[in-house]
Length: 338
Image 1 (cartoon, rainbow, N blue to C red):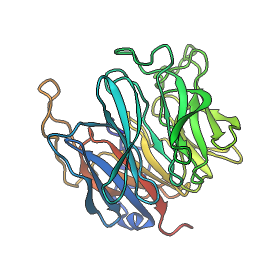
Image 2: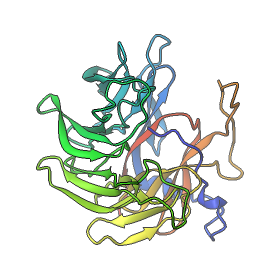
Image 3: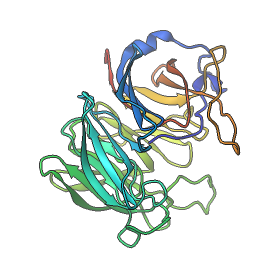
């Protein structure tokens, strides 16, 4: 689930990046973007064509969707909604609109933080998530913290425990649908990246890679919120707040991404080269504010979904004027990989 403030766009930075968009960048990625619509709806947008379709129609009688996965390569999506008597329910949504209830678990998904953001594998149908710790399971209004990482296994038709404790952050699949990157907390580390850059800053958690077939589990790097590239060769991690780096899987070589900043996060890394991210509308482009706002907060500026080539710093808008409160997830590949 992505519900966040705005990432400052590369063109807003004073670091020598181009002030104008490069529209040709849009044609370098092909993607399926899914997003929620109130109440309980899910829409799909194909990129770069912007062809839009309804996967799950909105209806005032539906329950809200609290967690949405990225789509798999065959267009399926998983989501979490509220069940009866303080439970959560996880569903799999097919391209034809049919739904299958996969999991019912203890705890309200909103108030009890009973389940982390979920990760549907790009292939194979596995769904990874972190549950509340045993001592908090089923209890009211518990904060989200480290807990057991679990896997919906379509072959077994059941959930199995992967035997590791993970921070309550969305895991990220490798393209093989077998290996998984997740965040393993260390003593004193925070669930959310710290602003403190001083000597008293808490330690960073470790990003691990686990083979969900064999259970082989190895530490990879430090940081939060891993995003594995569509080619499996690298991942983006967040170190301190808004300090992003791309790390090569085989060598551990790091590349700083200083323009990804200001309280947001990237959505996808494509072929280890193209980052899809939330951003502000480009100067000169249409702008707007949100509707149906809280009386306490008021309207918020609309965002845009953008893509940047980290080799050349060229960027372009993919989807303009997106409500920043919307859950947005994406499955993306390079249209013309170099």
